[in-house]
Length: 221
Ligand SMILES: NC(=O)c1ccc[n+]([C@@H]2O[C@H](COP(=O)([O-])OP(=O)(O)OC[C@H]3O[C@@H](n4cnc5c(N)ncnc54)[C@H](OP(=O)(O)O)[C@@H]3O)[C@@H](O)[C@H]2O)c1
Image (cartoon, rainbow, N blue to C red; front, side, top):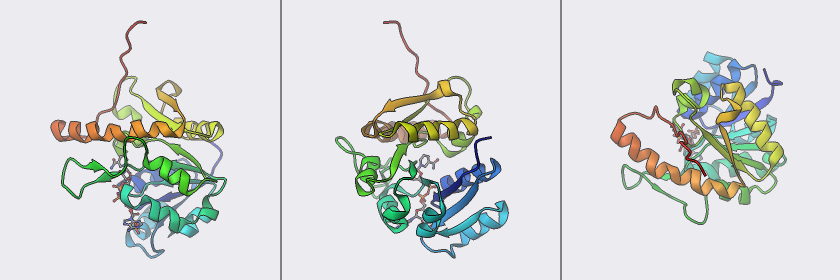
């Protein structure tokens, strides 16, 4: 097991709860963060798992590592509520996707092309060490990669090599093999991993399941 960490998982949706539960199972001290400290979903999760819950700012303040698992359209607001001072110097794993469902399904992206949500988060919190990861696949696979057979991949990116190494170690503790982790380079590569959701959501619509992932079949040369 990795050294136990104090982790804040910001977001009480399915993704936040799945990640927070796995982290508790792995022996980390986990606080699930929400807008208010009396969030019933967070309270129920804490009672069930032995984890803690708090508002975004309290959760981030107490943590060594922070995970953003808030809806894309609300991520900047949630991280602003978490507080720049509580994120400074910390690894911030960004799992969010900038999906805009206001026009129905499939969603559009609220930011794309020459920018990404991950970069917006990094610009808003220049002292945080943002690593984009886990946003490219369905939440059950995030914490149990063996649900999909074979050498399927998990792209990660970020500007801080040490932060990426720390996140890679955490992902390996979830069951990812190092050969499955594909370091795409700087955080601006999140433009690609977030835009993948345009195809991911369409595949989901056609296949009727999110239980699939990317496999790179390479040719010679
Ligand atoms: N579903 C998947 O398998 C999957 C896979 C990859 C990536 N993702 C990404 O993971 C993220 C989380 O997804 P999810 O479905 O678990 O949760 P979600 O429903 O997208 O987000 C839930 C969180 O959003 C917060 N929130 C809502 N309105 C807000 C506002 N006005 N200001 C600040 N915060 C607000 C909620 O706060 P309260 O707790 O206070 O209510 C809650 O914590 C999303 O960005 C999604 O695109 C999802």
